[in-house]
Image (cartoon, rainbow, N blue to C red; front, side):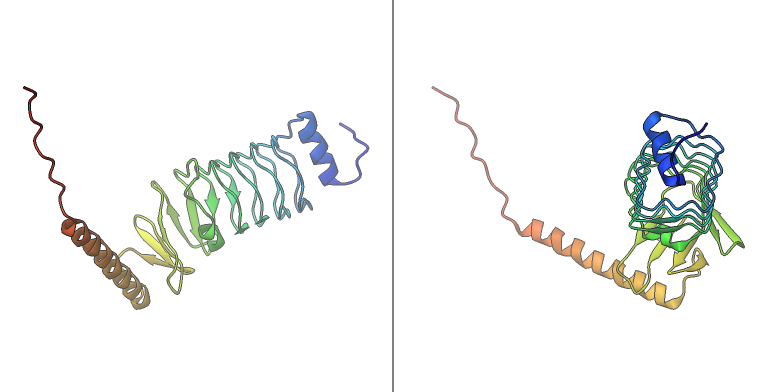
Length: 212
């Protein structure tokens, strides 16, 4: 296939507009910042080290793609399928992942946990690879708590305190103090709300009088 476009970005945007499928395409280190690639069909492609900052790449098929060390700063991946994609070393910042699929994908950069993940479609079997040495496979969504001195991510068997991986029950003292403080505050709020509700007068409805 030949085009008159001079850059990879222009060529890819043309392919997307024309509905051209690009399975297994070699797009390593492509400069795709701010590119309009919504609907890209590139299953199994290599975008290793690609700059996708600010790019619109939603509604795309990126299953089994090599996305290692890619830049996803301000990138839109809404409703894209990244199942089994290799995202080790990929950097995330303000990345939009609403309704995206990440089943069986692999991530390693802690910046991933700073993304808003509450509207992900699914991430069953996602693997978090920590420093290339330890791996945690998710079977459920993790619990992510922000607002402490460091971000806290709680998996089933492990957790992240900032960028440090800990086994469950072996949190650093700083993390344990933060968790205890949060638990205490939550209990106080719940107790206050319960007491407040109990102190409210119960409305008494007079019995209806049967008509004569």
